Amino acid sequence: MSIKRASVTELELAWFKSSYSGAEGGECVEVAEAQDAVCVRDSKVLGGSVLVLSRGAWAGLVGLAAADRTV
Image (cartoon, rainbow, N blue to C red):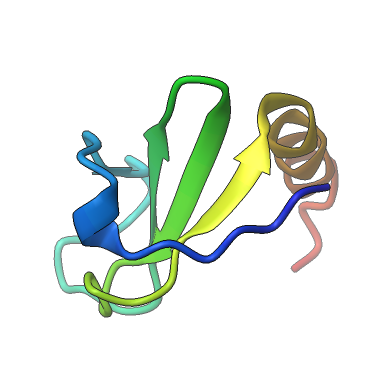
């Protein structure tokens, strides 16, 4: 897995939240597709750090999250 710190101003991306995120805010992350990666950030800290994952690492993370519905 590759983790890279980048400012949001360096990345002009189309960020989106999951349809499972409520309109009231709370603890949400936003995701955006980059050329060869998937970027993740905290929706409450838009100017904060961005986690950049390879597409394979992102697929693995989503697969694990979908498999573990006990949380």
